[in-house]
Image 1 (cartoon, rainbow over the protein chains, first blue to last red):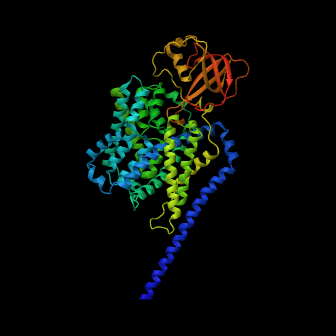
Image 2 (cartoon, chains in turn orange, blue):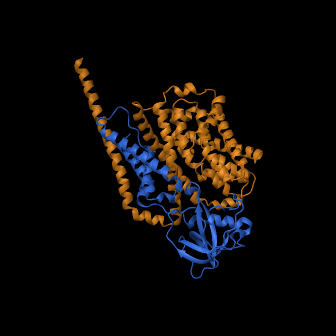
Image 3 (cartoon, each protein chain N blue to C red):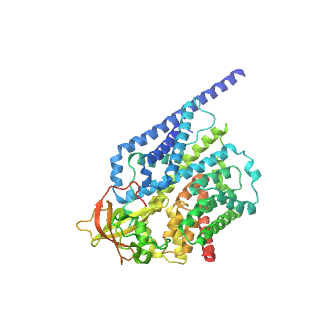
Length: 340
Length: 225
């Protein structure tokens, strides 16, 4: 009996050692790859320089870097808040204090979005954390949509961009609240939370709170950062490949111009704190189509779709983005027709 | 998290800090974002450092399993690019491809310029706005000084352009002024110049300036308006 037990213990220790070896080797390989990439890039520097001498490539690279750099502070803020929730908020706290009926929770979440002064890159990790901490998914998604659209910084920027037209600010806030609430309610009624498995699966790290915070922030930064790169590259490619001057052919009013500017918002992937200034400059379009640009932009764009796919899963993003696009454009048309 | 993850994270933070220290970040984002980039850069470097130290000091692999870095590897692409060659300021390539910027938006009526001796330094945006305001009467025939890059040739001169950005280069919109009355070959495309001259009415969508002097200059520290 004892002999068999010893054997088992021995083999377990051996397996542990093997495991240790493998992990060590994997870590070494990882660091080696980082070094290799940097060295290879340094060796290829003349090639990079040649590439950047081509105007189209330089244009692409500048926009790619611009979107990435611009998003970093906001992403860092969102990740810090998300990691703090993971570290300091007890597991059962959110489900206990938040309303669990969608009819109440979703509108509350939409209005609560006003409290997060950042743009869309920050709200994605926070919404992901809320879902993994047991908040009602529909409410977390509503918060995700409303926070970048109706926070005070964005609304003040909108007022500055449209001087003497307070109606635009009101219309933007109203249409964004409406769109976020409707998407949340639709998700509560028809959405399948199994598509959120990626956010649900994110397990909490164990240990002292500060250690949990570091582990979570580190993990989120690499995840979200990687997907941000995908989104920024897509946006830069579309901006370089599709000249914005084609917009001039659909300028004016009517459904085509609303769709054109809603589509432009998806393609441009600019920060919600800046989009009002771009909208203000597109004077060849009706106010309603420019409202659609400002309502769709913070909720659906190529960079956000990549971030959402990274946080919640690809199958989720595939369903959520089209739903949000249709609802946001619809709200803009409705509110624009009423107020503008 | 692994040592490699910590290393990538530290590099991300280091690149952000380098962009702010060298002022290169102004090629990509609005100047006001500099402080936030610095704060984010420091926080990210510290995060990566803590991860790296923890990974090295962990003598035995702990029972928490190692998360893969996954898509995080992609962060190496902009890091490698930015450490070696910083992409340039947006240039003439995007000028013809952008949507028309209609300067008439916003802004009320301008007070007339004082008719002084020294030319007044002015942004291209203000030049355009004044040109649209009552057909440019507020210029009061005073000389002005503009800074921009050469975006292309036109009959008897060249197009001077500069981008205005509200957050980052992804939302850049070009402002164009037609510079007339220059003699000789126009400066080459994308060359930065400072132009002195007077507004001439009747330019249509792109306002005209009749130049008295054109001088080539290095790109300004803040390339966007």
